[in-house]
Image (tube, rainbow over all chains, first blue to last red; front, side, top):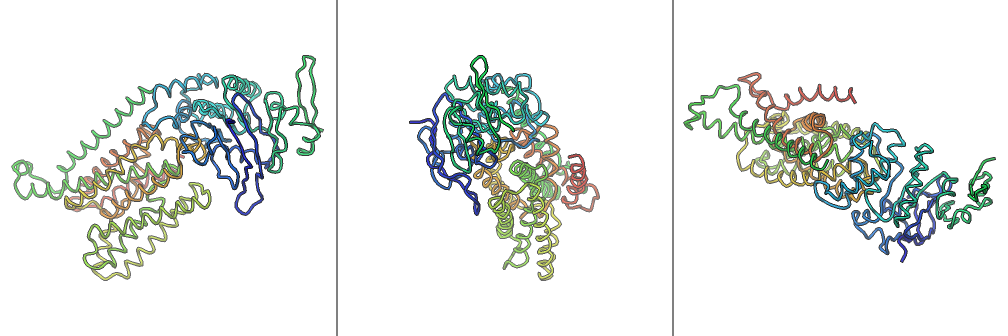
Length: 256
Length: 326
């Protein structure tokens, strides 16, 4: 049984063209999967459906064999941690308090437990945010806020992490650190699924790429297989090239 | 941090309860019409009767009403993630008033009897909450849109109240005027008992949900991703708010600004964490209205000013300051 299974998933907003039509895929523990595709391809919608944030028009998403729609929100969030593209910027809480929201699915008590604080410390360490713990979230830069949200998802300690463009506001150092974090999570047996527009970074760092185009899964495989230049050109309307460095590392570049 | 939060929460609970208790104990002894404390001590008429049958029930009504309006304000602010959301700004208070005035104007028999006005006020408050929630279900409205909707609801309800006022007979019209002024007149102890029984479970529910209200402050998507059943808790919260406002409005008439002023003032003192803010608003709101009522009884003695006037005179300027300092 796969950790995550998507079966003939369909979604449409009322009275509009379908966003997703018949998407099927599976994902296992210890994988980093990048979801790529042009704007409007359905990447964020797919992530929302996996997180149970939207209800599919057809098909199903299963985590550990259970349909996400049949689970309570708390039970689902113990298995799946979802970081959307952003939260209200004026949230009046500190970094520690934001990160601790990740423990909400683990207990209904009025106060967080010692275990919750242990998970928070670990998440702060993993996201390199120890020095930010007492700062107000609203006073942080866009990139710092993004790292705090990722830390909150880590604090959730779910086996599946869904991240919607987590590198959108990050500088190269922090974006590289984020992918290193994903690798370490993979080593720890977690499944990390990342929506990204940074195809070059996805090509370098992901184990697999789900390439979405016009609501369909156009390709599913290791980066070199899923991101063939001719297919990418058809989808993005710009030429793509794979390169190999002297040390045997491969890179994807694009542009006219 | 865990121990620090627990200590802070305990401290705020203790201070809030102490403030409410101090107001409850001291304020009934104060007032415009002088009281002979020696006679009161000997439990002699009329001072003893005034104290037991007028001032104490009045203090208890102010305590319960202030707690209900203030905590409902804090609750709506959490659910709508907007600092300006209150029972009044959302139109819930006006709708409760419309319901109550309808009952006073047209219900057969002794229409100002508590259960009839209560049921009508609840129906009015519930209808507006259902409208607000229904609009939210159909489309994602911003808090700003909901507040503008509240202004429209306030306008419509006020117009309908005036219409009912015009259509009602002379006796009923006088009753409506008296009720609309808003105040914490002395009520009988059984009414206070019924009010306390209706409000206590809602107070407990709110206090138990404060950690969840914190997560809801981050918005629907984030809260749902942290295991919070957002729609369920929002429905429950709005229903609780409607009952809090409808129940108290039925007895006191409309009293403005408590739900805005108290949570905001306390948010600046104790911070945004609802585990601290909610109990502070609950007990602080009770203490605030008891003090306002004492001012209303004393400021122009022997005349009495309706407590709604005092809260509006304090809350109005605060509201303007809040808008300008946002």
